[in-house]
Length: 91
Image 1: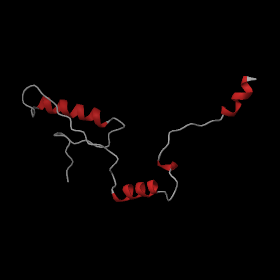
Image 2: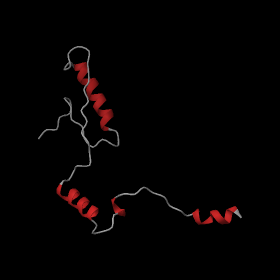
Image 3: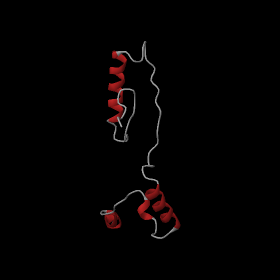
Image 4: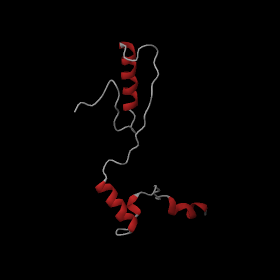
């Protein structure tokens, strides 16, 4: 009998709500549309990380350690870009 009551949930699909749940034409959907089209790339937060080194920060050993550290940070899936002394983007 309990199996019969639970059978409707066998094919249930659960998810979190996102912007797709907003009714088209609603004020919140219009504001979201305005923000995403007029202010692109605003979905990230910049974080400054300060590294303390032993000795000269620009020594070969410290630059190699910084390069390794920034490589590990950049490999994280939530990181879109990284700028540091060892990997400044050239324009």
